[in-house]
Amino acid sequence: MRQLKTDIFAVGAIDWDAKLFDRLIPLPDGTSYNSYLIRGTEKTALLDTVDPMKTDVLLGNIVGAGVDKLDYIVAHHAEQDHSGSLPDVLLLYPDAKVVTNPKCKKMLMDLLGIEDEKFLTVEDGQEISLGDKTLKFIYTPWVHWPETMSTYVPEEKILFSCDFFGAHLATSSLFVDDEATVSESAKRYYAEIMMPFRRQINANLAKLDNLDVDMIAPSHGPVYDRPEFIIDAYKDWASDSVKNEVVVAYVSMHGSTGKMVSHFVEALIESGIKVRQFELATVDIGKLAMALVDAATIVIGSPTVLVGPHPCAAYAAFLTNALRPKTRFVSIIGSYGWGGKMVEQLTAMMPNIKAEILEPVLAKGEPKQADYAALDRLADEILAKHKEAGIVN
Ligand code: FEO
Image (cartoon, helix red, strand yellow):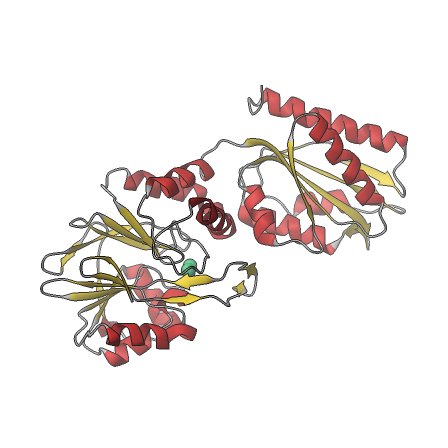
């Protein structure tokens, strides 16, 4: 148990060994499930719980803090990595009320079977007093579920933001001590789960403009005692501006698409465009997602397999569509043996990407001189498009 401020403690769990979230998202640096205990002069509140795998750690920390009566358990978000221990905490403190919004209450009843009488629902902006400290609830929907909310403690100027501003990072440091490392983890987290909700995130960021915040305590990763660092980063990531960058995500079976990618990437670099190249059979999807946050252009490279794209390329297209990056231009390059519908199938998989499709380049078998020339033209067109859009001078 560690102290953020007088009578405010971190009582959650560090998960150093976590490797995969949702059986999908790589966790190269582990994660943490943050839970906070606030002791007021009259009431005591717990803010969020932890993943059920770490219930023992949470209960040990609360009991170790000498909490004999818990008045409120604030549930900011129904996802089980923060709500999963709620039933066990309620068993230990049966008189505690679960404080949440009506939407989250419904989800907690559906997901965890928590009974109706256990809840105290709050509206956006409503306050609960703990005595010398106030919990002010601020609805922050779609970071990243529809029911998500935050809690602001005005006396201490702390915002408890749950997943919003979180970072999958296991660290022994309670506060951010290395902004570069945390920025990388927080950007990965934003890219993987927040990016599809960019519009709502901007609306939630605007809500924070009216708050005097000295500290942001998220539910994953360290606490921000210099919150402007992560707020500014979020404003940049969620903005409409893109960078002079091309993501080239490709897979090659027998080398033809690989040769095309090498030539194309070299042409882009010579044009002064930043390139991030990913080999899709071995890619860390978190790194690919992070690259999609800023890139003006995405190019998928694929051979033709069973008349369509390689499954790895299809996975990348599906993921890109789901993550809804602010990409302005998309193209496809690759090879085929005798025909197929690779381009049609890949573009049909990305209806959410409101980007201009630039003329794909397909080579029949081994790329020839004409194919390399077409790749040069595509690189030139991308540069021209970036200039036209004011992304590069
Ligand atoms: Fe960290 Fe959406 O749960």
